Image (spheres, helix red, strand yellow):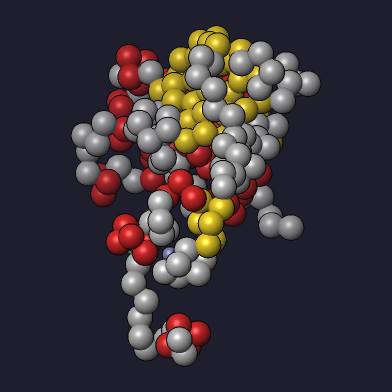
Length: 211
Ligand SMILES: [Zn+2]
């Protein structure tokens, strides 16, 4: 068990996602590699949405950016990309929604730039108006801890678009590579049709070179 991070005593009463601030930081670092400002802010967003949901509700999640926020949901809720309860939209909006998977009612929380104007460092960081080197991480994190929900807005929503998990479709065996692939990709898999993202390196490919 890792020692909780040392936290300024003025901040020791902060609870977020059911954790002390030290445990919150530790969980972020363990999962994400470092304590990123987006993830700290994201934790406060999840915290707010969770507080509004009834505790017995099984919530699904949608996040509207690929940056940081998906990890906030994956650390602090049971929703992950892998179990299909978290949907990630690549829209680059700093917003997330938790909703009841049965009646689709939930809450959307977002970084509200009108409010962030009162916390200039957060505004400048998010809008990339200041070089990273001029805004030390500790300073930015301090501002985020000062602000917490003060830079966020929240609204009840009903999800209007089904995000049900896609079931696996028909599977074929690719005549090019011999791997299983969805038949919907065509006569061969995407890679063998030239849409792959890699090529084999001859210097280490013992199985392939034997063919
Ligand atoms: Zn193939």
